Amino acid sequence: MNWIWLHQLASPKRFYALAGRLLPWLSVAAVVLLGIGIVWGLAFAPPDYQQGNSFRIIYIHVPAALLAQSCYVMMAFAGVVGLVWKIKLADVALQCAAPVGAWITFLALVTGAIWGKPTWGAWWVWDARLTSMLILLFLYFGVIALGNAIGNRDSSAKACAVLSIVGVINIPIIKYSVVWWNSLHQGATFSFTEKPKMPAEMWLPLLFTVLGLYCFFGAVLLLRMRLEVLKREARSGWVREELLKTLGEDAR
Image 1: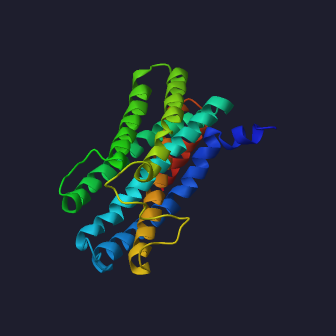
Image 2: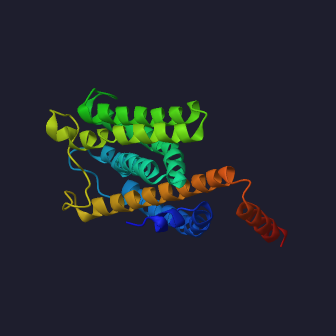
Image 3: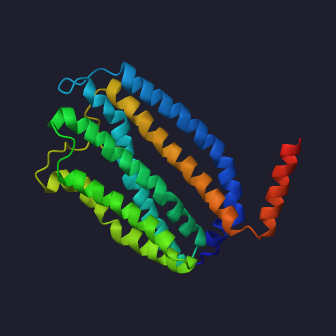
């Protein structure tokens, strides 16, 4: 199979232009969706019949937990693309996504602890779901550390790709930990493939926040990747053209 089209699509110049067109749309979508979801969920959604108002942390915790796992899966996919097809933009995506994924995972752990205190009576328990999420955070730290520690760019890309691919085995462990082990953590609260277990006035704002956080991640990732591409391609002619174009628009 001819993969030339994939290399052409992943060219730095083409990616930079495409990302520039997508950024405003993703940014606006993130602000609108997150604004609607958070305000609706925190102020207008009815309280849970068991947990009362403490359940409202779900509108931050669940989207963060879902995105933390999705981000790592994306990194593993980028690692495969970089190793198999030698596409350097895949390495850019992987290393730019790792810090964002680490912050999102940290947010999921912190909000989970806030939720766990009134629910379980403790900020932290060595529950299977919590422990595997903590391992995910360490995997993100490992990718970031490898990227910074190895001076050679190609060696760094290979090492980060291998760790991302090996570490992705933790994702099904996170997902099915509540099924495989006796876990304090409740089952899946939200799924795109199953009928919601909550009334519409509770799960609709959750859907808005999930979609909004994914749009936010997309915008941040594209912005970081554009900056990294400019850094790596600083001596290329098209970068000078983009710079002159930007300076010309600012002069107006």
